[in-house]
Length: 345
Image (cartoon, rainbow, N blue to C red):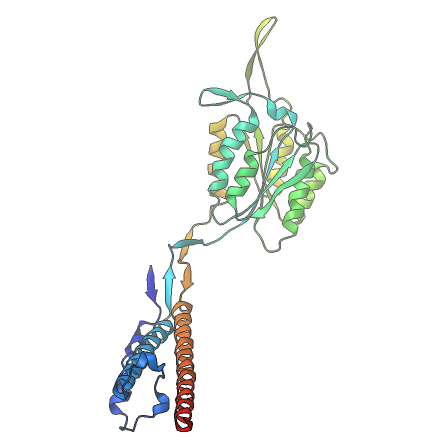
């Protein structure tokens, strides 16, 4: 939407006319006139004066209107943008160990592995985190930072979607993932630090044990929510027929529960996509999405447009006046030479 910040400035538009009417009449100074070349002016003095006055009035009127328009501060207001009331630092750690290949999850009637299910549900959770700084950690044999804390949720979701199993090994370094998250949080002071750690196994690798990482998290006030992935039962076909197995037998729920509770978080069990979606809804309540606060309308100032045009016309006015002076002087000089030549003849 286009508008003027100070529209009352337009009340000054008739000021030159008022000054002209109220100012004591004085003999007009010839030097104040706009001088134009004689071939533009015409042949008579009256035509010269009329042309000069009209051009001067046109230039002065347009320049004055443009200056008043610039002083009124024209501006363009964009669409309203919501500013969240609050935000937090939320780091998400996703397990990429070999066990995440297990196809014990079902989406739309189709069996998928645990990572595909995690991506499917976690992407929607990421996009809901309006106002939060999100980061992404991937871990297996070790942990590495895939996305630093950022407000760009789309980029975090894209980086998550591009992950593949085995990218950083086949084992599970839970301690390294927690330690890396604590380090990234420590780089930012005065933040609400939350880590959501998702794994389907137990700690089998890493340079730091989960217990040591847990102590670091408590010292730096990092709240950890842990999520155990994997179904409780899966039917497999073998030489002796079908049998039921527990594909999550390696899941260390006791460890994940201790880590979560000791830091003020909570442990959740995700046996299928529906339960994982419900967990994210619970997390929205425990760590609420920033609410809608004030609305900001992006503002683009446009005062420089009429101001530049006014300066350009002023420069053109001065240039025409200068050229008029030079041309008239040249004409007078040529006329004087012609007169002298006639006298000599």
